[in-house]
Length: 96
Image: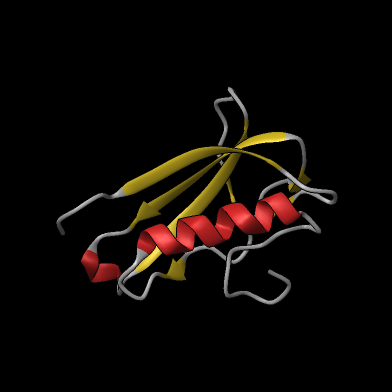
């Protein structure tokens, strides 16, 4: 696997926040991290969120998702979804 493996940005969750597998909806200032999984995992990225400056990471519901050769585009779509809020899920999933 070559090229960039991880993207990480701060984002303010929109009304209704982001849905996580572990704790349900989280809101407010968040950090979103997208990690490209090893090629043996079929071209997937894992998307996680945390409260800004916290230690605990949570799985964005619907993750992992296929990146179809452009993991940065998946990260950008996840950022847009979280900014929109409404219990945002991983891009390409129902309700995202």
